[in-house]
Each structure stands twice: as C-alpha cells, then as structure tokens.
Amino acid sequence: MKKEKVIEKLDKHCSEKLYVRLTRKKGSFEGISTGFILDKSPDFILLQETDEFRVLGYQVIPIQTIKHVRYNKNDKTIHRILKEEGLISEIKAKYKVDLTDWNSIVKDIKATELTIISECEHPKQNFFCIGQLKRINKKSISIRYFNAQGILDKKNTKHNFEDITKLSFDDRYANVFSKYLIE
Image (cartoon, rainbow, N blue to C red; front, side, top):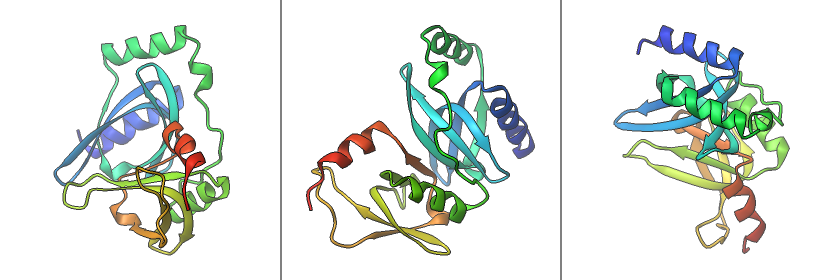
C-alpha cells in the first residue's frame, strides 16, 4: 500500500473512530496491531489496543512502520461486537500524549509513572524491554528493566528511538506485573 493511501486511511480511522487492523513492517519483521486510533501526528499514531474482544492498553507506533491499514467485513464485525458488548465506551485517551516526536511522547508517558514496554521487533535486534522509564536523552530512553521473574536489573537499559517499533503503556500485563517486582 502506498504511503499516501496509508496516511489517508489512518486519518479516516482516527476521525471516525473505526476499529483497525494494522500491518507493521520494519526490515524482515512483520507484525499486526489491532484497535482504535485515538490520535495521530505526521509521524506517529496512538492506538488503544483490542484483542479477543477486550480493550487493552495504549501503543505508540511510528507511521513509517505501518504498511497496510485494513477495515474489511471481518473488522466491521469485530467493531459491531465491541459496540454491542458495550466496550466502545472504554475506547478513550486517558492521557494526553504529544505525538510530535519521540522526545515529546516519552516525556508525557514518563509523567504518568506507568510501566512501559519498549520493543524493536526486527529479527536482528529483537528487543522487548519492560520497566520504569528512567531517563530521556536526545536520541534514546533508559528503562529500569525487570525480567520474567520480576527481578529488577541493577543498571538501566538504553533503547535508541530509531530502533523502537512499538511503545506500550497502561497495559494490563505491565501494570499487574510491576506490582510484584523484586529489588
């Protein structure tokens, strides 16, 4: 799908609050995100994720990684079911996130004090980092990572903005897990 067509469809889904299925790609990585676009800038979208008829957390996704925007009969059915289940009322931005650039995005997210998940889904780099956002630099962030046993790293983990394919926050997994961390 041409970039102009992708942007046109993102604009439509954002303004009309339609359920969307996004195909994201960076290098040989390809992934899917589903939900509702709550806000958009020239370079980023704020998506409220849905999965299996549940309204989940928020994702900031660079538009340059979005290769296809889908809203077919299947997606219309999912939208209708979410509406009939009374879940559309849960679709809303609880936080103001300035989507101008990575610096403005992470400053607003850091202010929430929520646990974040920073990901680079490219197979050669492939990182998943969950933890507290500790530092914001011109070209990167530092996160106090915790592992799958809830043990916090002694040092912060650095992620360059150019490598991030998805940044999640106020996500059930991160919120619940972060209550049970071990120093």
